[in-house]
Length: 214
Image (cartoon, rainbow, N blue to C red):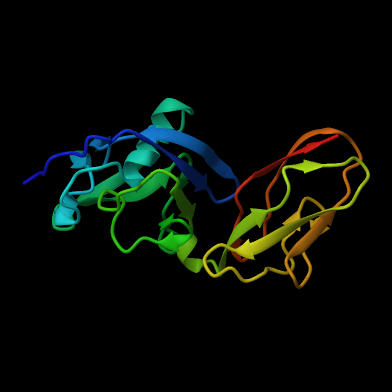
């Protein structure tokens, strides 16, 4: 049985897809409850009411993935469908496929979702993260700092674990490294717009932060 849909079902959410060696997608998409079709799983409803999880249908983490793949980029994805679970198990996004020890993980607002991607509904302001090899990583990096900087003046950015908020030492933004407080001090030598991301070997790379230097 499928329930009625909310009057407001087409919403904008942030979605980030972190592949094995690079960011596959990062941005805002409009998404709504819908049928999802994958090569391995076929076509099924994906509207939050899967497995009776929500009484009213709405957009989900997996519809956000579907919207990202269809609207702004040309990457594809695949997943099997478990009829008992009433949900997809995402097995590949772009060129990164699961194997015996590495799988795709799903987080909402930096926390692992307790249910599958078609069961987990999303709201305006939510941040969806699909991360490859998520279950073997220690941290899920979050990068914060100013969006403007002055040429030649040291500017401080902060790297934390998005899940717990603790500062992360040893993360890199280019050639600059975070200290024990998670701070990275960068002195820009040229003007323009720069996109920063933090990385650390045992972590999922951070969100992007765009800085205008003048």
